[in-house]
Image 1 (cartoon, rainbow, N blue to C red):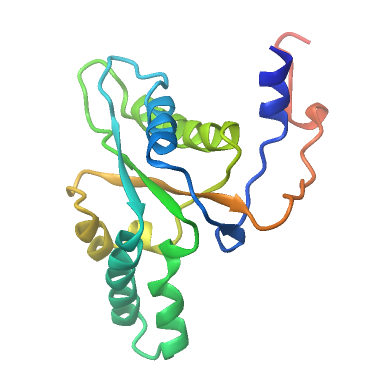
Image 2: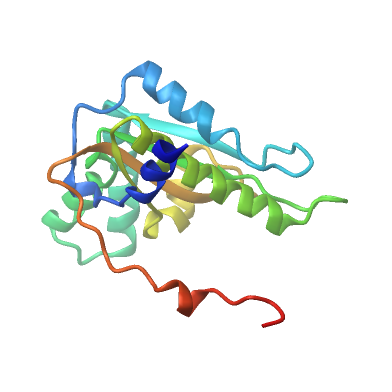
Length: 189
């Protein structure tokens, strides 16, 4: 058990531009996805799904992101458009977590959204357990309908996050964490 705790204590986010290849193999990616699918899911609704972006698919969706950006920013420079085109090509593997939360007679939508968040964090932990680094982010294109349509999301679906996975180009640095005394209270004391 101490090994699992040490693993959890050493997880760090690494900026997507600081992730390099090679990325996870097909079997490692399957392991990562399998672990991410084992999250709390009240009612067994599976209120999330995954879109795997690897290889050329990262650049294909990048074309859609660049077009959406250019449409929103008509004064954008070619360099800015190129940056947007490569947004999802910064890491060797990107997994989009799609929230399918919606009204249900028994299961609050909030619990379904939290389940998608748990799936996202499990992707991050699974990647870390396999020796990779990850970063869970959304960014502007997670909210752009043109990009969501290009990814195949229905009008009711939302992006919970894009999890970028690769090898860290340098050892990850820790950041200050809040002291427990500032974030923990004990009821009745």
